[in-house]
Image 1 (spheres, rainbow, N blue to C red):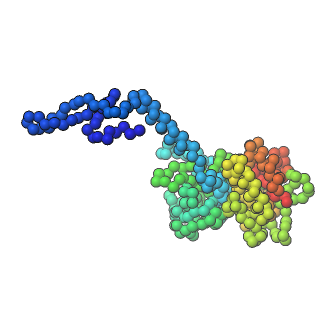
Image 2 (image 1 turned 30 degrees about the vertical axis):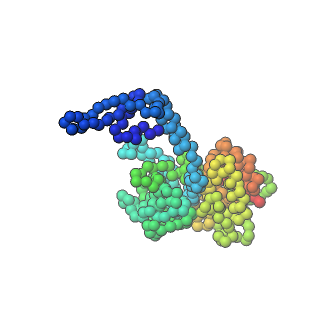
Length: 367
């Protein structure tokens, strides 16, 4: 409601209007005379005005708070490629209460010097150089977020574009962690930094410290006919971890990840069904692992990693998942147990809660 009078000489009073009328006295100078003036329309009482204003504010708030986010934003928030494969958080996001206090404004993930740095999603290089003596790479994503990586270096120039999963740099050496690690920071691209938890972009929205290192030297072998039997195995005459890109297909619901084409098609259908139930596609933290990546993981995890050339991921028929599936007992995990077999995906017996190596996040294609 507009409470401003159309006439600048009108003054709003509690119960009506008064109007200033000008006339000239005997001296010819301007004098003011105040007389009562009530227009034909009537105004509400102050209590009614307050009620109307309150209702208007509440309606506006409802509009702004219930407007759904764009599909792209919802997808981006949980479906990015992890900057290093089999990402394992060793120090979680723990921001300070006040900007000037100490805290952990990002996450630390296990990484080794010389390991490739992968682009989480489509974007451009924002900065490449050193910050406080530490090699730093920061990127601006298409969704409008800034991600920084330390220690890391890149040959790309500021403004250069890249796609999800593309190699954009190399992990360097540093002393931020007791163990070799990569520090990841994130904030919206605004004038003032407001750090947010980067883990949510990689399907680990609760900053879970995933025990992804609990891997045997030799992973479970394919074979058998049971619904819980491992499904990953040789095909097409290819060697583990040495499958050409032309023999695989990129996941449409998880850009940057590759699988055998029939597994990819089935997974994307399953992911869309999952999105219809939970609001966003399934986050894939790991899919096909080439031989070089398996070597890096062995170097990073030691005896806890599969021997290079034996990983189930090396057949492009296995995935590690986030989106809540990575915890036993969640609605998302239970949905997968009930529905994944309809799409040819199974949770192998060894990875189940009662199995020899419980991994709620690991699923395999058996068709």
